[in-house]
Length: 514
Ligand SMILES: Cc1cc2nc3c(=O)[nH]c(=O)nc-3n(C[C@H](O)[C@H](O)[C@H](O)COP(=O)(O)OP(=O)(O)OC[C@H]3O[C@@H](n4cnc5c(N)ncnc54)[C@H](O)[C@@H]3O)c2cc1C
Ligand code: SF4
Image 1 (cartoon, helix red, strand yellow):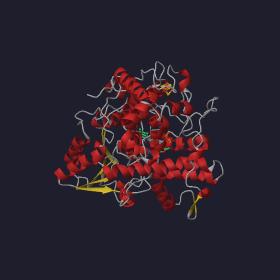
Image 2 (spheres, protein in one colour):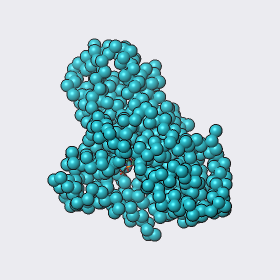
Image 3 (spheres, protein in one colour):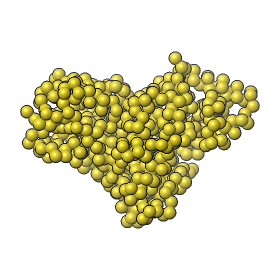
Image 4 (cartoon, protein in one colour):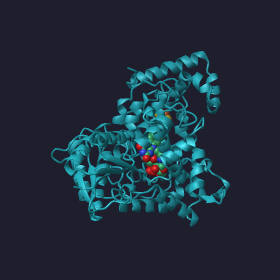
């Protein structure tokens, strides 16, 4: 009989995690399970399923090599149950542990399911802090208490000071907290400079087996396995981190928001999946960027721009998620009820920017932040798609998708469904923004300058229609003053023409409300 059953979830692949504190490999047993429900509760993409399964199997091997006994249940094992809860029940029956131990799960749904199993089994469940993060859920709750509005900037500054990141004593290094203004360049007419090849990893035997399993078992799931080369072990994740820091970080800040047709990787890090699986700790990623700046190999704007994403946004969205779940999932402040167009699953659209973002997403399980926020997300926002449908899509298609980070980004930042809890205004823009930030409009049948007529860009039509639909609400937001003022310049006939063209577009893409 084992003393403790140590629960390790698919996104907790860290040998140093708190669940191992005080544990004894001689008496305690590690439990991991590939529950099919985790791949099907949303229509998870093939690459996302493959990444989780491959990384989990590699981690189980690393645990065994470190001396742990591991009860590892594979998706293709005989008698495997469909859900994590059912599998855990089975493991408790097999091993009859005295107690259960785990590092706090990232997702509310999983935590609730496992707590329920522990309660029905009459076993204590010892849930420990996740040291992967800079802050705790409790610290964020304390920060949020009494504040009417939460803003990333204040939380980020608090963490910079507390963890002495990019600080010069009590002051921010370089005298500025934020270099956002330096980090918004496009590539210009010439396009991007030569882009260094990112670290990609040839599938080994374990990954090959998983790819085969996923291709057979989840053949009808979206996406592709053809280019699968993600880091699936800690050693590979560390290699990917080093390559990014050396080769791409120097350009990260400057072109953080830029897009270019067919270019998926650009100067981003592609480290979100490795971090979310906990193959890398947030601390070591931030330290690596800070050390590069200290060594004079990257400028402060790039180092700060990158660090803000992790020490700032990533910690912030986690705080928001845990502060507001489960009600957060139900938020729909703009009362959006339209459907998600079917082309989100096959990229068959004539909008060049959207087609490119969708094709890259489905092919690689990846798109960078501005493609997510200002191409796919913006389109869904302007169209008025029901937030839960948008959420299910983002949770399905990206290899780095886990609910605690995906949900606030989708519902809050991108769809404004939380009514401004996460972002101070909706990220609403017309096709002109996309024209400025990339080269897609040149190869598109639409014209971003036109809101009505044969060549009108759907983003531009829908942008004005969005402002018209929400004029009263937006007029109360000081950060929307300019946009609402421009709206007032439209006469009645123009307004009518925009409304009619928007409705026609909604019908054409099959997004009518039920
Ligand atoms: C609608 C929408 C959905 C998203 N869904 C996810 C998701 O499921 N999983 C996920 O990790 N990120 C998500 N993001 C945030 C961000 O887009 C991705 O983290 C980033 O694009 C991943 O690529 P990268 O690793 O190359 O990031 P980089 O551009 O290199 O950024 C560095 C790191 O900063 C962190 N980061 C950057 N932006 C954010 C952010 N807004 N919130 C939290 N962390 C951030 C990530 O860990 C990322 O790896 C989403 C953003 C939007 C707008
Ligand atoms: S014209 Fe509109 S739809 Fe076409 S690429 Fe530009 S922004 Fe996208």
